[in-house]
Amino acid sequence: AQKVTQAQTEISVVEKEDVTLDCVYETRDTTYYLFWYKQPPSGELVFLIRRNSFDEQNEISGRYSWNFQKSTSSFNFTITASQVVDSAVYFCALSERRTSYGKLTFGQGTILTVHP
Amino acid sequence: NAGVTQTPKFRVLKTGQSMTLLCAQDMNHEYMYWYRQDPGMGLRLIHYSVGEGTTAKGEVPDGYNVSRLKKQNFLLGLESAAPSQTSVYFCASGTGGGYNEQFFGPGTRLTVL
Image (cartoon, rainbow over all chains, first blue to last red; front, side):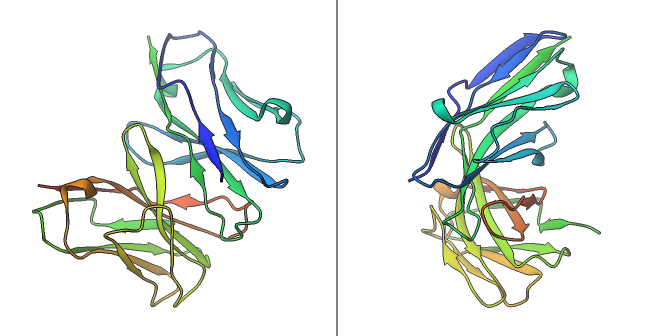
């Protein structure tokens, strides 16, 4: 069965600090996909990134970067020089190829608060 | 394009009442999903549909029914609401397959007293 664990329930940082959100996953499938979503205080879910299991290259997008390591089943998300607007709940999610209907299994979410 | 819309945005029910949540998408997606979000539990899949006229159970289907009579609409019904169904409900649509990005609606906050 697929499972996603985000062990950090809440993180609080001061603006301009770097912060890393951890995500550990479990799956028996050899082909799978990992996602990060952001949920700002307004409540909507915003797609941030998708990564497939064959692509272990790290990715950087502005202040955001993602570190995918199959050896440790982790897909961590780092925000560099955090800003107040980064305050949100962040979800990591997993989808397996064999479940062709694209079911997403979400982690519990990490509440990030960035103080000015 | 409106993307994925949900109606209503907020609702308060009494135990035992029934209601229907409506989800509509204008992206011509085959796949649609209903999730519920509860504190500390992330989002969990209630039901999903892989095309018009089809529905299937997800992770937490008990107490809910769904229908997909039209491709663009996915309805979630609560026949006899219970306090345990107090939650935020999200609808999503996508192209299917594990790689598909799911597009989410704005959510419906439901309180059952």
